[in-house]
Length: 478
Image (cartoon, rainbow, N blue to C red; front, side):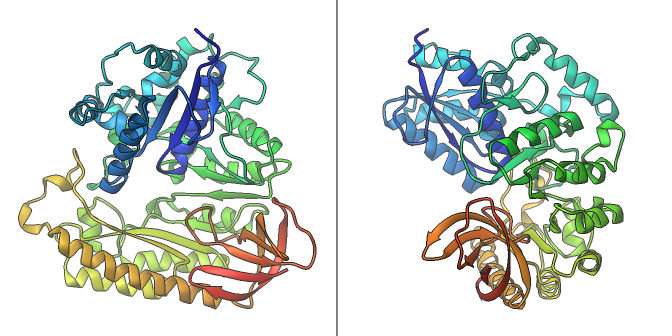
C-alpha cells in the first residue's frame, strides 16, 4: 500500500469522542496513514459521529454527506455508526452518499479498514447490537472478560510504541493528540450500567468498565509531557469508577495521585451521578491541592415524580441538600448540571419544582434540553397520551433557557470581588488573556478574561480578583 495515504478526522460530540479520535489517529499513524488537519485535503475523511440526541444525530449525518459531496472517500465511526450500523448505511445510500459505516470493533484494525475504503472495496456495514451483552452482568467479572477480548491485539500494539504516542485504553492501545492546548480529556472508564428510561447510551457504549490506575497515571504523565496543564476526567459515569475493580472509592484514591503528576496544575472530574456522590468524594474534591472543587452533577430534573419516571434518584429537597453540602465544604465551588424539560407526563407542578430548584441552587452552569424519543428506550414506549407535542416542548425549552441564563448571570455577578485562579489559555493582546477559573470547565461553562500588566503564557496559573461579569463570563485583574 502506498505511503501517501492521507486521512482527515472530524470529531463530533463529547470529550469522550475526542479521546476515541485520538486513539484512532494513533492507530492510523502506526498503520502508515498520514494525518491531515480537519478541512485539509485528504484521501479519506473519517467522521467520528455522535448519537446522543436528535440534533447531534442530524449534525453527524450532515457532516458525512458534506464530506462525501467533496468527492473523497468517507467512513463513519462513533456512536451513531455503532448504534445504527446497517440502518445508517441504508439511509446514506438512499441519499446517494457513498460512505463506509464502521463499528467500535473495527477500531483495533482501523488502518486496514481505511485501506479498504481507499481501494474502493465494499465491506458489509456494521451490524448494530446491544453491547451490554458482550461483558458479564457482574461488574467484578468484567475485567477478565475485557482482557480476553483484547488478548489478540497484544502482539499488534506491544511496546515499543511509535514516537509521540502513549498508552490509552489499555497497554496495547495508543493515543495521539490531535489538538494542542493546555487542557486534555483523560478517559477513566467506558460504558454505563444505569437504566435511565430516556437514555440509549448503555446499549451502544456497553457495560461499565474502569481503566486500571497504572494506565491512567501513565497517560497523565504523557499528557503532562506534551504540555497539558489540566486533566479533564471523562466517562459515562465517573462516580462508578472502580466498582468493577473491587473498590467503590477508587476515585477518591486516584484524584490525589493524578494531581501529583509533575506538570499538571489541575484535575477536574466530569459527569457525577448525584445518587453516587459520597461524603468522602466531596471531601477529596474540595480539599485536595490540584483537584478543583468542580461538581458536574447529572440532575436531569428536580421533580420527584418526573425523576422516578426517568428511573433516576432524587427530588428538589435532596438535590438542594447535596449542593449545600458541597458549598459548606467549599463556598466557591463550581456546580453545573443539565436538565431535560418536556419529559412525558411533566406537569405545571413539576416545572415549578424545577424552577424553584434553579433559583435556590444558584448553579454556575446550566444546560437545558428538550425531551425527544430515543430508539430502544423505555420512555419511547410511554403512552402517547402523556407525551407533549414538539411545540410545547420547544416552548418549555425557551422558557427554562431564559431562566438558566438569568441564574448563571446572577451567580457570575455574585463572584465579583472573589479571588480566583485562572488557567491561561491564549493571549488576546494589549494585556488581555483568555482563561478559565476553577469553576469553569472547557467549552461548556464560560471563560474569564484576565487583565495583566506582565507577560503571561498559555498554561500559567494566575491568581486574580474578579472585577466584572457578563453573563456566565468573568473579567479578572491579575
